Image 1 (cartoon, one colour):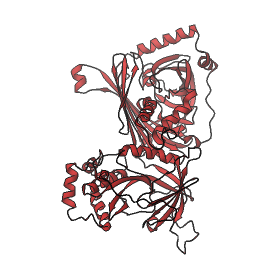
Image 2 (image 1 turned 90 degrees about the vertical axis):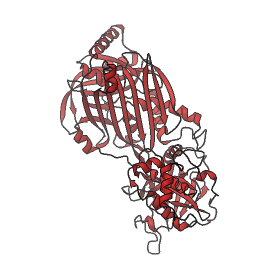
Image 3 (image 1 turned 180 degrees about the vertical axis):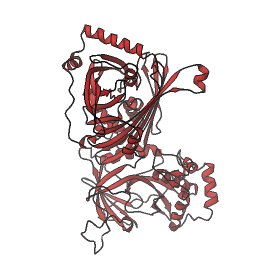
Length: 604
């Protein structure tokens, strides 16, 4: 179903929180501390797996992840007395017979493919466009189908949605594909979701009366799940198929059985056609469309309600989810691309305070602007978000040029260009270990292309003087183009593509430093965003990455993009260690930034 959530009403808020946790929070912050165990992570994957495969309404996640504050609540569109009675008490025997007849006729009408189509939708909350979707259907014509004689149809949906959680904002992208027979029997499903920098992948294939799922999250070990499946059960495009193949008439009720967004369960999707209605569209005009109330039942109980407005040919023109102030409008492709053209955006966080160098002339002035390159030292305060557990003694690490001090409300942090001992502050410059020179899945120091690059370009580079460090990093990234950051890639893959995001370039630089026998680690943390659009007393920070390298018996922080050494305006959240792969650490960072509040106390 196009915008179907399939989530039971009594667990709606809890389920949305669990889904959001998979993206921005650690699931077991109380019981397991700062690291997720493999067992707990598998449990978490199982809680979100059907969301990732079907994600029938990623808009629901957007709304419940913090967008509801964008506009005041709107009155819900009411349902008929009969619909309310059905939701609470169920249908009587005569109505049940009518429903069965309608369902049977719908199945008969679904015997043939509805034809090739493509639709674009804009998703809006109040006056703000928060997302865009492209849906399409076409026959599969390839060597396999020609050889086998199968007649298959491929349905695909691409979603881009702005997700907000407290002070954090990022782009979520989802691609879902369903390959089906002409009579709408699902053969296979694929879905990928990128939320921030975290990637989720899922797939399913039909085997007799079972649908076998496979899920993988951020490089974790894959998990599997089987769901009972029978001919006539619908996939993620069931409602579109049904309406386009046989449009509903006023007073008609239709039921479709398909997958629910809770683990291993099926749901009944009930459509009630109430007749014609005058409907406001995206451009402010009004259209007369057929109104259909869509209700999802799980175990005989109402789980979700939506309102669809549909043309005579079965094309859905507008959708409203009454529980959140979200409207979705069908528009032309050019209008969708004009209104919502979002690349893979950086993860942004607003922090209270302003970076400013303190001089005799500037003392006491808070409006001198962000001149971060002039700063020699910056003070931060890091604390838990209100209402979260506060039993973590160390919220951010003391390492390299970053010193910390635990206080009642969190940590005080000082980041300095020239690190030095501070009274009562922890300051760590540990000796490197063999792990800081080791190969990992992403830091492929034995890859021939990386070894060759070091041998050809770094023959005269010195690894004993700190002054040579910038030159080493410059050599490692000089041939790379900076592009928006997507899912994390390995160093060899970045080199082959010739481009990478800020995290990719940090991975690449760390790998080449290790190839050159310089101990190096990847750091995830905050840096000032390029576009400061927040209020005057807030600064926008972006989640980014850099490296720390050990030369001259000291750890130095180096940004491979700006080529700044020991930047004081960079706040480290996590520093890579040998026992955890980088995708896992980035996942944990993504949860950290939803739990932590950062204040900037100034610089000098």
